[in-house]
Image: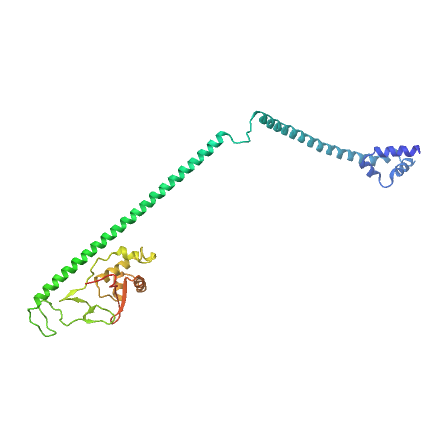
Length: 311
């Protein structure tokens, strides 16, 4: 019994590394090895002591790691303690008001007043802009009415001059002798007295050469002025600018000079564009009711008489 107690005490003092080194035989195997007369004591204890040294080395390394952790925690505790001390001193010295003060209400009222002033300024600017737009529209309307009035006055003056000239011609021709059809009079200067025939589908008379005559031999002309800007405003947006606008204006000027109309080849030569492009421009003008298309021994394009009256 005393021997067993001594063995248990020794076993409790041995570390876990040494326990593993003893093996599955336990203390009895160590005792048997110690009691063996054939082996010396140093030979028996060499292997367990070596394992004990290795275990102690591992313990030293782990204790060094624990020491590093302890030093890091000490540094953290010192820094965190400084932070807490600073917060405590700040809370003791600074007064943190939880309710709004008089200054807070004054700032709020100042913000509201600035917002009201800004809104009033914006409303005034909007009113000024609206007034400017209305005045500009009125000015444009006055200019348009003035242009229309001038055109009407010009048309009336032209009609009055035409009536006076026609009355003078009728008074001068009333006393002259009637000649046979086909003869030439001195006033006509080479113009045939055969009355011009009317083409089916149009109210404009034409002679064999295709040019309309008024009275004794005047060529039909526009009663007003061809305003290209108004014409362009009635076109689609794509055709209001270059490179489409110049050929379209050339076509309109040619048709204004030749009231009875022009054929497609003539307009192609005037516009200076390809045939399909000229045909496209004519289609746009027809759709905008600026030009009409009639059949007079072929397709003839002319200005719309409802929009561009002639005399």
